[in-house]
Image (cartoon, rainbow, N blue to C red; front, top):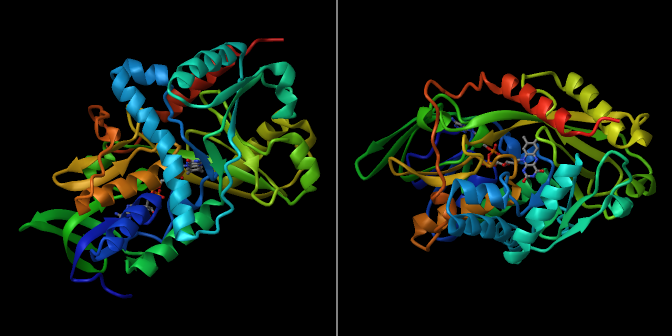
Length: 407
Ligand SMILES: Cc1cc2nc3c(=O)[nH]c(=O)nc-3n(C[C@H](O)[C@H](O)[C@H](O)COP(=O)(O)OP(=O)(O)OC[C@H]3O[C@@H](n4cnc5c(N)ncnc54)[C@H](O)[C@@H]3O)c2cc1C
């Protein structure tokens, strides 16, 4: 096993989209960079996600206005939109073949009041120049062949890609730019030394001028300040066996990315080659096996699309997303260490963009972001083990059930 280099300009902890985007920017700017991952490269969420690219945040614009002032809310929203443009430009510049397409997203209303909420938000979004279109239940068949929703809303600043191909393309671009990698090498401790930092790993110590923490939901006890501020939540996905593409396309005629509006939401899409349904959700707030999650997701998928009840599940997997207590990501510095954490399940475009911002900041090329103004606090006693999730999950399930009209 190769030891870590003795010294470098920047050590990056974590080899997902955040770490790789930062690494590429920094190496392209002439700095020596090592990316260190505790596991295989891309072991975290960056090779396990649904590949949905969206310029939205977990909180609505109205909720952001309530949590911050209107200018900050607008700036956060604008940057979320910009992150999609950043991603598209980055993919094009690096020549990454990852099946990216901007086909848009459809938010399916799970209850009539959710449809009204989507409509109200559409007006606020229009004022910000965000293009959306309300789709009443009578026209929903153009988006979704499912009888369980009450209409919805499309947004054009969204698309889909193959997450692992995108990750592999970033790794290749980083290598070409001169980035060094050390996989299966856990960082145990990072502390200031002189003008820089010492990063202790399983394979020796590296003296780094700057350090970037890009560990998101996989932040471990060796980084207690960060770990106390992120809530790792399991998300589960299945892919069906290969099926007739025409049959699948009839279920999602515009082939958009789909999310429903439940608190315990489902997200789904066609695979890039159109031969599989990819169906995901937070089916459990306790760790469960991928056999069990497959059965639960299959049942859910069959409720949305009864014609898929007989479809076999070919793949089932899981990964962790990171929430902050504020449900908004945060980009910042702690004791001089740069970080971007808490994607809240929407990190394909955003975390890529944040990594690049951090790189620019270190290079002295700007890199400002409104996400440095979001709060990033914890609660007393929380050490990174979210014991409260099963309770919160059940509460959300109850609220979802209460909001749904009973037949
Ligand atoms: C099932 C699932 C579905 C998702 N679907 C979507 C989607 O459709 N659209 C979307 O926008 N987002 C989605 N997300 C979220 C998105 O994947 C993440 O926001 C994004 O990949 C986070 O990237 P990252 O680089 O910050 O972290 P990660 O990719 O999670 O990487 C963190 C890395 O840090 C490493 N690490 C941790 N501790 C140490 C240490 N001490 N030393 C060295 N290395 C360490 C880990 O091994 C890991 O590889 C999904 C996530 C999951 C899990």
